[in-house]
Amino acid sequence: MGHTIAEKILGNHAGGKPATAGEIVVADVDFAMIHDARAGNALKMIEKLSAGRADFALPHVKRTALVLDHYSPPPNMEAANTHVAMRAFADKHGSPLYDVGDGICHQVLPEGGHLTCGDLVVGTDTHSTTYGAFNVFGTGVEGTDVSAVMMTGKLWFRVPETIHIELNGVLQPGVWAKDVTLTMLGQLGAEGANYQALEYCGSGVAAMAIDDRMTLSNHAAELGAKAALLEADEKTFAWLKAHGAAAPKPVKADADAVYTRRIVIDTAKLAPQVARQHNIDDVVAVPDVAGKRIQVALIGTCTNGRLDDIRQAAAILKGKKLAKGVRMIITPASRAIYLAALREGLFEILTAAGASVEAAGCGTCVNITGHYIAGDDQVVISSANRNFKGRLGNPKSEIWIGSAATVAASALTGVVTDARTVAGGDWRAAA
Image 1 (cartoon, one colour):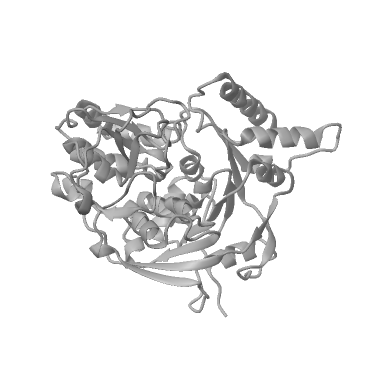
Image 2 (image 1 turned 120 degrees about the horizontal axis):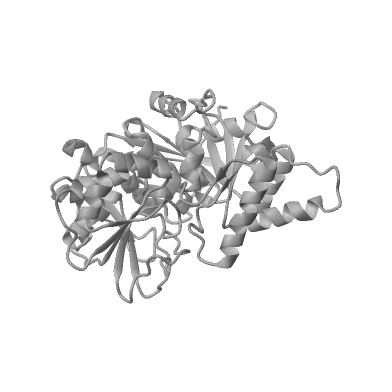
């Protein structure tokens, strides 16, 4: 009987032999991440455990990145003091530190060369599944778990069952990985893959750029997935090499691997999708709801704040203006992406169209910083990952979720719009 990618990676880190779904393993962790919204508990735990112990040590602390991205910039004294404590901890122990404006944890970890194919990586955020785009078993844990990793380099896992998802066919211009993930949410429902791994393959995946693959793995968190894994290819190897990662150790599933379910999607036939207010799995095709009035457009977050997303928006809005009464905010996923977008002139295009650009971080996505709160009965269309009631600070507003292209096209017209119907609806064709 063969094994899945998830079974192989966890097995490789827990003695060397492939593990089996349902098995409990204690595995060596290659790298860990803790962000500012979860750092408080972790640092308190370390302080508690180290009290009065001259022999206390954190041998794996240098393989744990501290990321200041949720309280970015800090909206209150408590958050500011958490940042002070994190900086002091990093200075003392030599942990990699990503400060305010450096970017979102799930972007800066791969950009910083902290992971490579075949790795096991954990982070204090459900969207740590993002790392699966690089053939990494990435998963979310709590802050106290990261404390254990810093002390021992290990964590226990129950090996997840795996759903096999085959994407066949190249996405049409104006259709993106976000539309695939929303399709999956419409099929399986929110939490429909709880504690299961997703394994994506097929010609549809092979055709995707790395930015889109990261969206594919990232958005698996809304399905409740433990991990979302892709096989590595030359695109993966080239991207990792360009970012200084260690030599890849690619892992493939066996031909006779056992899956709990197999799903096949004809990606060539997909239309743009949106998730309607308050329910991430209330998914419909954009043409079916075109014309819905919107007042706010948000592009960014760990799901869709990468360079290709910003290019999509700029291609659609170049030389044009936002619809009357529409505000647009753009939050790049990292400082590196911000600088790349500046060099390409993308922010000049978007600012001239009427958009505002924020520093890289999570603050707008989860409304921690309070930089934008929608008014009563206003409709927000966003490229973020979640549209929970009150997510942006006002439970009386609506949040719709779509790709960056759908968001930009809707901001241009003032209503939910299929990007394929507007000029510049595919930045690759417009370039």
